[in-house]
Length: 209
Ligand code: DC
Image (cartoon, rainbow, N blue to C red; front, side, top):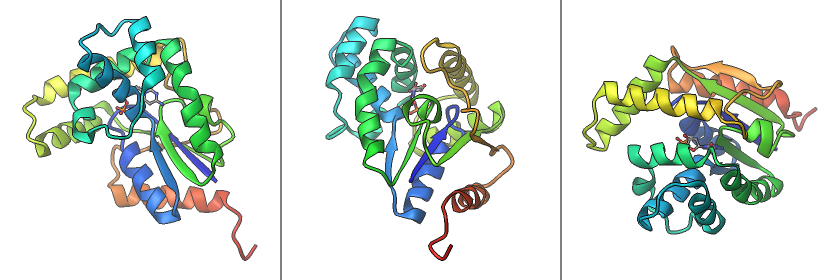
């Protein structure tokens, strides 16, 4: 079974993916980390995030040994969204994602999992939330990590990234035609997990038939 979770930044995909992986004993791949790792590799090498440089970094990217905190910064998120729009970068990262999926029993979250990477996923969720709710959640995450950034700056960054992720020509952010749409604006995490579990349970034939 593969559960594909897509949606805009800070909609709650990551938390939901982790909870579903735990509940069903599935492996998990956060594909945003791959794009963030490309951004980090580029910036660390002092190179400009141009298409060619980004594609080279993507071809070599390896999540092992990558520091999670370094990948999570607003700057890396911003550059990740820029490099993710280059077709050569996306192409370089496809095999790793598909090979993870083809091993089965996994939750994979990102922007194009249900549409491009694994359209045959048994369950596809498109998780979204209002701009305000997402900006507030992301700001609270920054606060918890002690990062000084204003709520307005967080809201502006999210709006720019989402517009870029949705407008690109290759694998834009959009729900698969058969995805379940889950608006989490007014829901707590437990409610979101509960709804998602019902959808997953309905998609998996019960062992007792
Ligand atoms: O989910 P995230 O914030 O870690 O993702 C960082 C950026 O990577 C995001 O702005 C868009 C890009 N991304 C993508 O284009 N496709 C994916 N499957 C995952 C992330």
